[in-house]
Image (cartoon, rainbow, N blue to C red; front, side):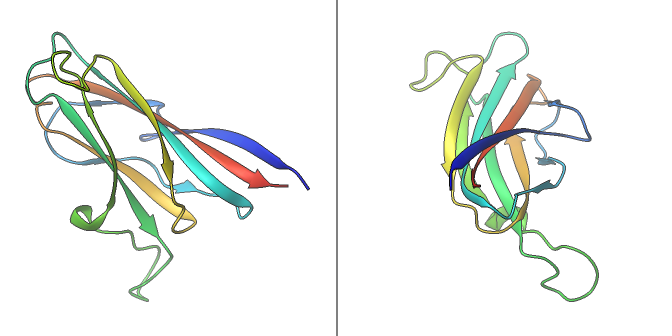
Amino acid sequence: MALTHTQTQITWSSASTKSVTSATEVESDVMTLDATCVALSIQLSTDTTGTPSAGDTAVFRVKWSTGDVLADSGDDYDTSEYATWIATLDTLATNTPGEDPARTTVPVIALATKFKLTVVCANSATHNMTIAARMDEQRFA
């Protein structure tokens, strides 16, 4: 048996990037992990439009679903405040760390087979931020 890597773009209403224009949470489309996934990493990217200033951050979290926990209809996802934090990217160059654009790849413990990636950009009403993400599943083949 071998291990393989499969990369998948995380999409936002079927688009590969999302322009965040307010300080409210945005969610990706539902992402489904393969049944043979044994390890997961996600590369995150954020780019501030114009010159970044203090507070230009993107906070990424994962909302997992194990299915229909409420037994009412369809998948239920973790709530916003209890979603799993995975990274905060700061685009102000004078901060450490801080650079624009900012990118990082983080290992993520796969807690379930479906998830939504969420992001909140605190200053995006003043400085729009373009975000993107890509997942890498290591699969047992």
